[in-house]
Image (tube, rainbow, N blue to C red; front, side, top):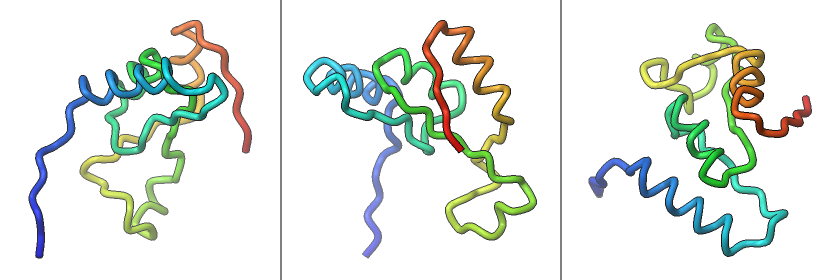
Length: 96
């Protein structure tokens, strides 16, 4: 049986994340989700998320992973994300 669900709302997502940030411990990790659109990820960071989930898989390798859909995945390089986060004047830390 396949159930149909409405698409989520970025406004509701940001509101929920803001509530999580208010009511949860300050050390709680609240990630942006890979299903959130590229520009919306940065708004979600401003709403209270503290982990930027990004796709750095090379385009020619995406075909090897069923979770990647070429129609919906927008790929950027790491420098783009670092620049955007710095423009937002947020602290940045990353590991490989």
